[in-house]
Amino acid sequence: MFLALKELKHSKGKFMMIGLIIVFISWLVFVLSGLGTGLSDLAASTLKYAEADYVIFEEDTDFSLSKSILSEDLEKKVLEQKGVEAVASMGTVSASIRSADGNEENATKTDVLVAGIQPGSFMEPEVSSGKNLTSSSLNGVIVDESLKEDGFSIGDELAINGYTEKLEIIGFVQNETLNHQPVIFAQMDKFRAIKYAAPGSDNGIENPVNGILVQATDIDLDAVNEEIDGIEMGTKDEAVKSIPGYAAENGTIMMMLWFLIIISAFIIGVFFYVLTNQKTQQFGVLKAIGGSNVFVMKTVISQVFILSTVSILTGIGLTYLTAAVLPEGMPFNLRIPMVIIYSIVLLAISVLSSLFSVIKISKIDPLTALGRVE
Amino acid sequence: MSSIQLENVTKRYKDNVSEMIALNHVSLAVDKGEFVAIIGPSGSGKSTFLSIAGALLQPSEGEVFIKDKAISSFNEKDLAQVRLEQIGFILQTSNLIPYLTVLDQLLVVAKMKGSITEEMKQAAKELLKDLGLEKRLKKYPNELSGGERQRVAIARSFMNNPDVILADEPTANLDTVRAHEVVQLIAKEVKYRNKAAIMVTHDERMLKYCDRVYRIEDGVLKEENL
Ligand SMILES: Nc1ncnc2c1ncn2[C@@H]1O[C@H](COP(=O)(O)OP(=O)(O)OP(=O)(O)O)[C@@H](O)[C@H]1O
Ligand SMILES: [Mg+2]
Image 1: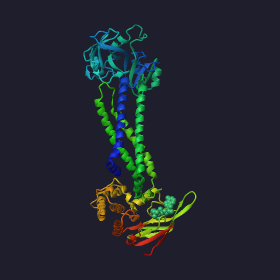
Image 2 (image 1 turned 90 degrees about the vertical axis):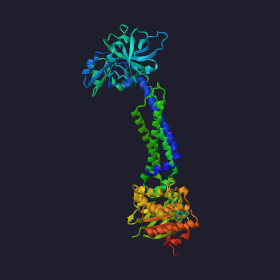
Image 3 (image 1 turned 30 degrees about the vertical axis):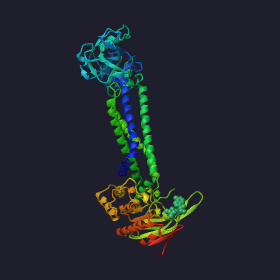
Image 4 (image 1 turned 60 degrees about the horizontal axis):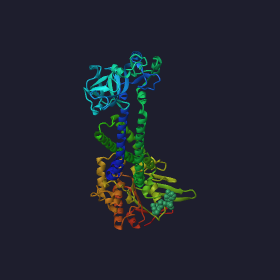
């Protein structure tokens, strides 16, 4: 630390340049991570952040809420299974909504996903403003806050294109989107009245829903799949990954992120390797006057550590500044655990990249101090 | 017992085809408070000798004793320890660390031994004062004259309170006046601090400050009668 700090202070300019590069790279990493989470939230937040551990779908429907139809009556049987603590049914249907005042041709329409849930079940999110479902008539819905930007507010009557059913906004919830659409939570019966209005569209299933979410601990998935006919139960993670486009989108962003992290490691590694090479004579002197290999290596490693730490922290600061000026509608969600994980990974990889220098140092002969050029 | 003793030391350099003897059965002992000079033409083996005496290089044959320790079988790590605790090197001027102030050049030695205590700081300041550098504590090497730099190197070599001081052509880059000054200072400190010292030099005018002078030629060491 002694030598590391003294040199950092003495040659500020040189280290500032490499520091700036690390700042920009970590900044980019965090912004990408925020965008990645934002996008994946858009595709899946309602499911991703649901307080559930498992999801039950109809057998052979690829974990797809739109393909699967189950009877809500299955809930009882599921609850009997070992380890199951609570269940909540859900149904989803895409719809296009407009303010009930406008007529069908002229009014601006917004595409949404109507999710039917039982009021009071663990699938009902906390409202950030307004009232929750339980306290309302059948028409009441609580909707994602992004609808505010489309001009909707509490008390608005909504009409659904192609249906005569009316809805009324009674509350707003945060970060509830699925399939890139804002979610409107409606009472289960209301949802059925919309999705299964046409006779026979429910395949003759009584009280149809599209999936059952399960809170459970120590559950034996295979046993449950065996025990109950016609269902397929998977973890919530599996269900999220089966959302169309989710895996591909996430994969792309993850790849960019990891490339950036590896590039930054290379830049740091090469920079310090070149510096170490320039300082062979100096390190030889340190060894000649009694410095152990470890002593000399520590100076390089702690320089990388200090420089990376300061740069990454600056990068985090810049990222939060960026987040503050990003437009409202931008899918950006910077989650603190992610920031911590990527910081640690960036730091660890940077320090690891000083390995080249460390190997070089171990090979420096203290004899170079005597000025013999070999 | 001598502070440093080389016993029948031979050093051979081998390459693919031939073998050359850089040191040929060399023996030398230096006691506390003695200042010994080694002179000889270029390529005669002076640097090789100093490297072996300073635990930088292992002899092909023979033994080196630092105080009572035989070091010819030591590994790299133990040799570094010997250099840290028992040997002080005065290297050529370029061998100060460019980003350290004069005081820090000495404190880095303390740091190698552990942590820097207030006591060590005082000792370092005292050493620098002895060498007339008390007004230069906060200067960097590039702000010093050649003579001042060499004086810092001298101070650094005494910083770890070693048993043996080794100097490799300490006057190579200095003008006559500075050269005399520097060697005089080394002699003074060696006597005052009671160290065994060996200096390799080209400059025969410096020999008058030394207690004994050896000449090395083709790897063979012989005492000179002055
Ligand atoms: N690493 C080495 N490999 C092979 N031969 C070497 C090596 N180091 C030194 N020698 C040879 O050993 C002999 C003694 O070299 P040394 O450096 O000790 O001479 P020197 O007396 O210090 O010379 P100078 O006054 O020019 O510094 C020379 O002939 C040199 O070529
Ligand atoms: Mg030489």
